[in-house]
Image (tube, rainbow, N blue to C red; front, side, top):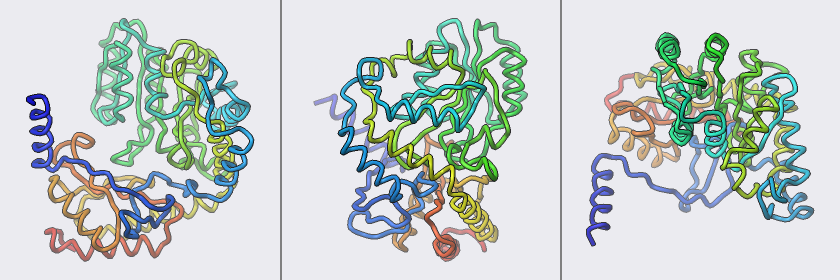
Length: 397
């Protein structure tokens, strides 16, 4: 059949270009060591930055909630699927991130859905969305689905953004950005972006998928990017995911009550989606309690980040300037990145090779992610393995 032949040719082309993706079957709970296809590997591949996906308190909360609330929500939030655990979680999340005074929150089944909901609820055909070129795909997809004009500016380039904002005659303007860029690990210049949004009366939509639970200092550790920069504004629309540092699943939007109500009333991704099981909301409340109280996890994770960067300094691979748990090691071409990931696997490490279109062509990389469950010895072992492999990869020490 010609239709199938075309698909098979496309898959063969992806293989030849080193772009084919392969799923691996994990046979153990999430953690720094996982059983993958029957073999135990030290995993530097997870977004479970605080190591909460298998935390005893979180697991216990899920068990107890399953016994009380069952395993399904049975309907959308607006029909009969909004349970007491959902309401309690939303209240706690809004109070924790505090994007503005009196903020409220709305939970979703995924960050992808949440971003689609934000952008389609707040923008339409006569509007414009200004997006950093390295934003996550869901922000771009949300902009396209909104039918607003999508204008992408050079990564972190405020002058580029300013010129596009000045030239726009859109009815409404939204600036959309990742807070922590998922493949580079760097932070968006959020204070400057908020200042620009104030100048042109625009919404500032912040995707803090990789900052929520991680960023913030001292007593604010874990509050996310807004606490890190000390920001609050009624024009901020904040999205945080709950399947990364929080260790469970889902996402939330926190913003001024009028924004939250508009999303709940008009976003198809919220109106027509069955609510997540209430047991997950209870697990997330337990997770949030750990994030708020366990400062040692944040301190240990910060120490691991410093140690990995120090150990990588003698090697000539390009280590991007990230202070977050995302530590990308740029290799270059697709085949070399895949080969290095395979060599590390043979040595007992699972580190994913990231290739286009997720990253720009010619910048294929290892995406090393650190978690609070790793040890200093784990980090040293990975650095030693990379140093061992460097000569065979043409990298000097």
